[in-house]
Image 1 (cartoon, one colour):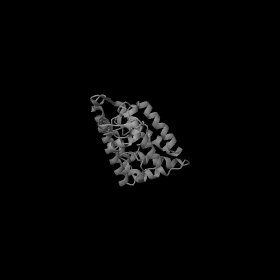
Image 2: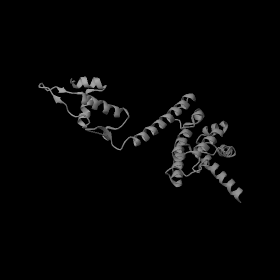
Image 3: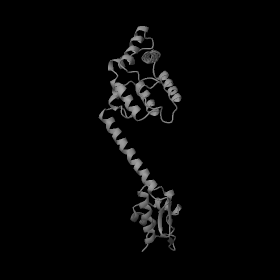
Image 4: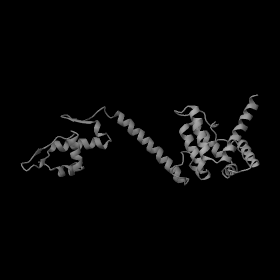
Length: 242
């Protein structure tokens, strides 16, 4: 018994174009043809096609597949692919967990992981800065950052967010002192919450990146307040070490 290309495709659960592609890759040998030019596929073609389809179902790139007289083989075996599949499964689990948190807290889809419950309380600038922090630190550092952001009093955050560029001296001093006394000075190149120097970044590069971000994300009064807050913290540290 023989089959045409379309009949073979139906039997194997694939398409005519897929069969042609397997021919071009050398994974399926060309069949004999009838006197009228129509292809005549036989049982061994069907078996080989099912074998190729089975390997494709496992996610093996066809570039890593070879066919010979004994069957279809995967170059390098399946162990590396198995590790890749496991990593992808773990990535999907993380993505599912992240989406659940975003949906639960009605947070924007781009919210940094772990900050979903805080998203509605953070300004656009603060969210942007946290995004940058997530690229410069990880693990325990991010946990400490979340804790600092979480414990920053809403009143202090709102007062800082509401600063206009032309805020007067007294207002700037008051907000800077409130940030320091509430231990809310997380918007800083010094990264007081960090326990590492970053991933592949040097500490100098990280500080420069954060400094540039602060200049672009916040207005002049907010930048001045953050600078004063850092100076106050530095003076306190000097006094404690003296």
